[in-house]
Length: 206
Figure 1 (cartoon, rainbow, N blue to C red):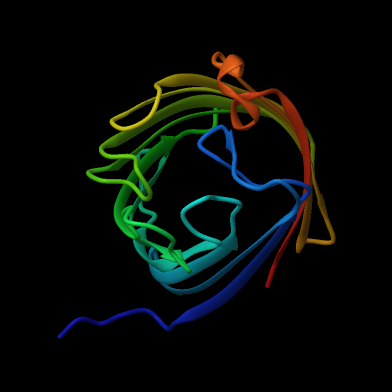
Figure 2 (figure 1 turned 180 degrees about the horizontal axis):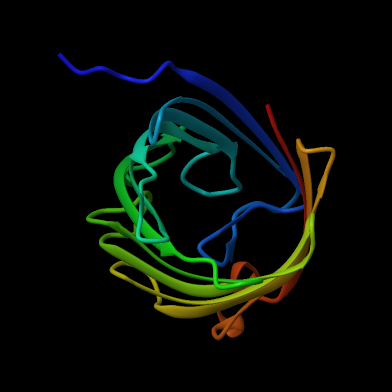
């Protein structure tokens, strides 16, 4: 029998001035993202739901399972998500498996991070998708961080692109985090989702 640690429930709500995923705008207006979670030590099960602006659905939701181990000073993260399109329209894919892994390590005030997200057949008309992102976070003060990241996405059924973001986050009272961030891609000529934008968000975790 497995001797699991006591369950630790959590709930996270994020409200952003505009939704974004993998460097691309996801909504025409604000986005609400909710993430309930039940952790058992380093392992967890959870779910997510959010609104999106798309010709193929009105939103996304799905279950998540993952683990956040630590080894030799490195913080690791591995997860699997079943993404489900809400109110799907047309003949495009309305479910997709997404696997993600990341590694980070604090070096003084700096924390470099590298992550990869892969799907064999993404939602909508996108087929196989690989998103690789590397970035660094700089601790400016006890509750204030600056961070920047560069990413590359390659996919079937859609254009490949590079993405960049940089911003500042500040934690208030232990539960609220404010974030102001600039996003851009190297394919802005492809339309609004690829163009530069500044997004503000508030995240609450309980």
